[in-house]
Length: 180
Image (cartoon, rainbow, N blue to C red; front, side, top):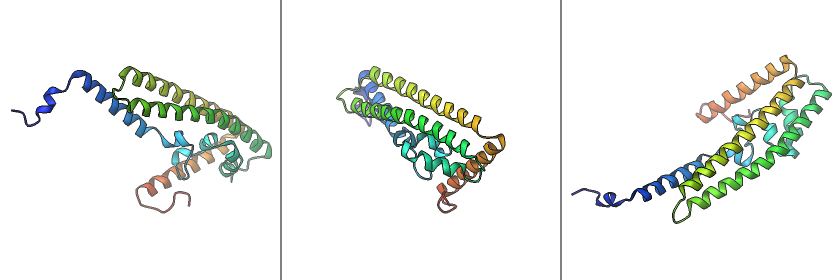
């Protein structure tokens, strides 16, 4: 006699439902918080791209922060603010869509029987939305790259690397706050 007799009575349909439930819960738990709620202070993913994810009201401050020490002209600053504001507006709408999809995933997960086809459909829509977000961020990055000089881009990339390195050290408990 098996030590776990109940395991022999699990139907394939119940196994599929359980697998779908696990998949939905993992997707909900692993959905990137930075994409879901906007950038977080100290998040290395925020980088210079964070200015595209910020709310329009924060764009100016973030542009000023990232252009500090780059000797950017007033014209460059204004162009980058316009690019970032436009991207932030577009990405804000996508952020709302991501929230709706997350909520749909939770609704699916809490049903008496989890519909595997509905979960797959949701997954496909999440992937499409992620692709749309990534495409918009890439577009904004290209637009900014046309405004900055190669030297300015190099300086900014170095600062972003240093920030990510400090964040990683902080995460591992080797240093203080990543913003210092």
